[in-house]
Length: 190
Image (cartoon, rainbow, N blue to C red; front, side):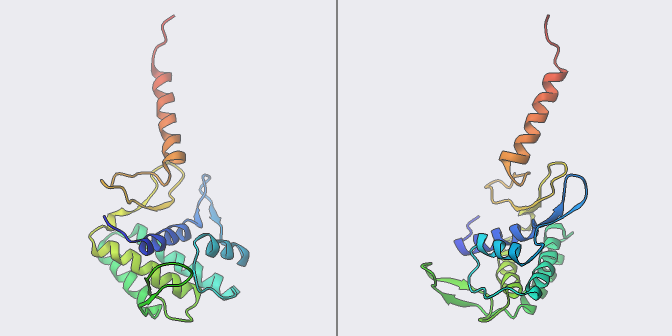
């Protein structure tokens, strides 16, 4: 599947946003967007352009957008995802426009000039997810299968076979556990 740089960046920002709220290993809730400083780190980490001074209302609005994006990863059907994304993109006041800012080549922004951070995320992230739906690739929106994880990710592997949010942590942890279980079950000659 061919995904351009801007769509990939928007998908990465959506996944990062969804993963700022997750169940922890003990079954409790972990909130990473606790305050404006955490929201600022999210914006910086994802290189989100056009963000002015963040306010408390931005934090609440971004958390609301995050909840709606999380629904896209757990929706029962493509129609449900399409309905959700249509609403998000419409509410964000999507205004596609070409731009070439900050040393980046020409690309499309979907958020309106002067949009809030939440509207920016809803428009760009909503459109990125919409591109997956249009391409018939909704099943690429996944949750990690490692016990106790459940982090969101977009499976961009060629054969759609990725099962874990990160092969070096969750995937490796499960492979090591399986190896140890096999070794423990094997009889050792005396």
